[in-house]
Every structure is written in structure tokens, then in C-alpha cells.
Length: 311
Length: 133
Image 1 (cartoon, chains in turn brown, purple):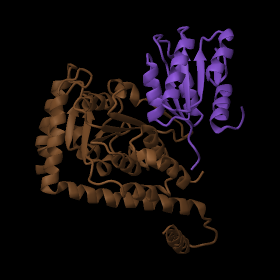
Image 2 (tube, chains in turn red, orange; image 1 turned 90 degrees about the vertical axis):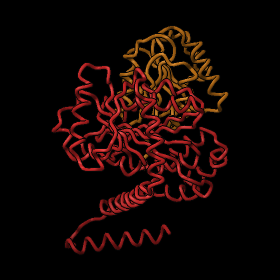
Image 3 (cartoon, one colour; image 1 turned 180 degrees about the vertical axis):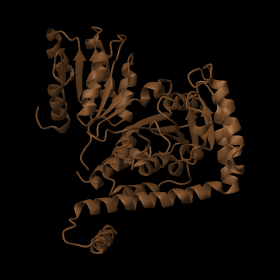
Image 4 (cartoon, chains in turn brown, yellow; image 1 turned 120 degrees about the horizontal axis):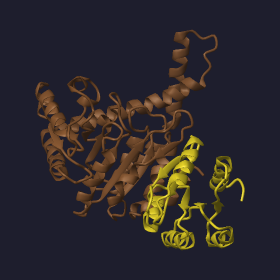
């Protein structure tokens, strides 16, 4: 079945707010990356406004899913409609995946106003998946009050989330190293707020103090960033975090920061789309006896041809 | 893009013996499937809700408590109510005498102890991709 046929089958129910249609629409954009933008364009005609998108990242086992669960249940209690995208890695060898984030989200998995989707990274290396921009757009079109994205357990350079989400929170476990680790570029730089989770552990306060001290030495922007001490599993400190996320979003909306971020996202999205198409063209072409320059112009020509066909 | 089979593996009911479901979930992962693992002590409602939200192609259940008839009945009833048409396979301790009744109820396949991963993977692919009955 073509994507158009599949789309037509579910689009009415999608706009009626039926969950099965949302689930199938996400599968559709995930499996048809080349047609996804056409699907998104069609969906967007029927929506207006923008939905705050909050990203949670951090190393494996830091407590991202548990924190997302605690945070989302607070909003669900106020009858807010929340969409959660939880990404876990795909195997580079078999492309299979073990998606286990839902286990930590049992408090919200039965809530009528919460939708959780587990997504596999499918070869993407930035901590998310290639389809993430499209999935977020599908969710926006469906009509949520907020969209929450949880990355794979992230290392130092898996920072795609900074382009996808409006606000980024870095969830840290109190045993994630000394201040040398905090000085390092990459993931430490992309957070708007730092969450020291498992604050009930004995070493947690010392870690938090170290983090605050380290941030105080940074530039004007970074030194003002907030640090939250929470225990997601014991639901301590989550309320403060929830309030701050809303407050930070309205600050960004009033000082224009949000538009800068939207522009950054658009550029990145176009880039990742072009890269994917280019990648496919390059890997499908034989180099043969072509020189480097000839091969390159051959690829560019192929690309322009293909673009013309798509339009 | 090649279709990725999405499997929900869940353990309904009160028994906590999850070794089997974990081992099968990992075998399906290694066979290139995307496995959504729900963990133990799930209610039928939770499992059906997960299948719905995740757009699963197939649902795998593991039951060792002896309550498989009631639990499967409940899950299949809920799925019908929500108009979810997703095949089901079952593993665990299931007496052979119960299998015909389970299949009549709508369970597509039952894998007893000792079934090889090879057989499970092959059968799951057959059911999802519709290559055999």
C-alpha cells in the first residue's frame, strides 16, 4: 500500500483525535522518510500555533524515564494533554531494539490524557532518530499541550536534542564524575537546566555543590542556568522543576529566544534531510573511473534531478 | 525502507517469573525486531493500551501463573472493544489441553518450554508478514 492510501485510511480518525490513528501516523512517517514532508505539510494545514517541546537527556540509568513519568503525571493531574516520545537505541548489527522506557512510566501509562510512544534510533547517532522532527510534527498536529522527548542514554556528543526541543534538561546521576567531566564540551553545554537526580543518595549533595560551583565559573549565559535537586522515584523537587519549565518557556517567548531556536531547528532539519538524501545517492552510485571531481558533480547532478522530480 | 516488526512483550497477572519473557524479548531484538518491553504485573488494560499506543504488529504474552485462560480472554475482549486487530502469541506454562481453546479464543500461537528461538522468530515473522498460516 502506498503512503497516500495509508494516509487516507487514517486521516479522518486522526483529526477526530483517535489514538490508533495517531500511532499509525507516526509509523507512517517513520517508515517513509522520503514522503514524510508531504504528510507533514498536509497535517499542518489543519493546525495552528506551536506546542512547547521539552527534551530530557542524560546518561543511561540517570533516571530520565522515571523523571519524565513524575513530571508528566503532575501535568496530567491538571488535565493537560501530553505526548511522550521515548527513544532507545537500535542495534548497529541487527537493527533490532529493546525499548524499555515504558516500564518506568507506569504511573502515566494508564492516564487518558497521556500518549507514550517508544521509538528506536534506527541508525541515527545523535541520541534521537532521523524521523524525530516528523514525529514531533505529527504529535503537534494531533494537538497536545506539551510534547516530551526522552533521548537514548546519551554520551558526551549526542546532542541532537538541542535542535529538536525548545527546552533541554540534562538529567545527571550523582556519580557521574568530577568537575573535569563538567568542563567538557558537548552535552554539558546544551542544557537549559541541570537535574541532579537520586538526591536521596549519600554523595548527591556534594555532587550538586560541585556542579553549582563549576557552573558559576562559566560565562554569563551558562552561569545563570538552574540546577535542580530531585528524586524522581520519591517525587521530591519535581514540582519546582515543573514550574520552572513553564516559566522558562514564557521567558523565551517574550525575549525572542524561542524564534532563534525555531530557526536553528529549521536549518538543522533541512540539513539532516539533505544529508540523508545525499547519503542514499552516494551509496547507490558506482565511482568507476571517475575522478573525485567528476564523481562529486555526478552526485550533485543526480540530487538536482531527484529534487526536481519530487517537486 | 524495510519494515521493522514492532512487538509488544508483556507479562499480565501476578506471577513475577520474567526470565522467559526477557529471554524471548532479547531473541526477537537480535532477530532485528523492535521490542517494546512492558515488564511484569501488567493489567490487561495496560497491555492493550500499550499495543494501541505503540502501533504494535504483534503482542507476545508470558504467563506462568495458570491464569492464562482468564487473562487471554480479558485481553482479547478489550482488544475487540478498542477495535485492535493485532495477533497474539503466548508463552509460559500452558497445559496442552488448553491450547485448542486458546486458539479458538484468538491466540495465534502458543510456545511451550523448550521451543527454540529459531521457531519463535520464524513463526512471529510468518504471522506478522502473513507468509503462512
